[in-house]
Amino acid sequence: MKNRLQIDVKGPTPENDKIIECKLLFNGNAHKVYLSKSSYEALIGDGFFIRDGKTPDSAGILNTTNVFNEK
Image (cartoon, rainbow, N blue to C red; front, side, top):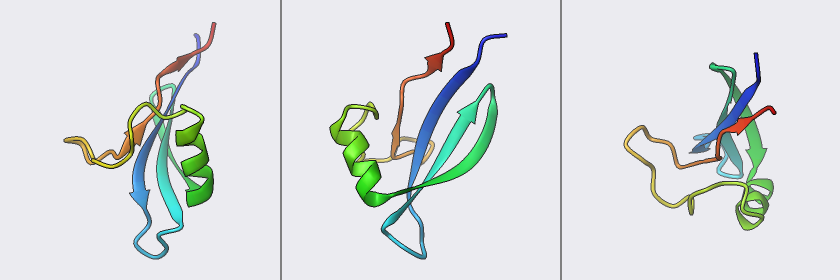
């Protein structure tokens, strides 16, 4: 089985807007992970995420990555 990885960005945590809550999807399993706001913004600038991160989609996801498939 080849591994699949994607990261969805939910947005800032209610307790601290400098911490970004994300959902790491690995082979269909979801795991909660956190990024600092500065790291998240750097990854946007590097083109890691595929949206601008300003408007959530219909599922409430603010940003996402491509799906990375193991070769």
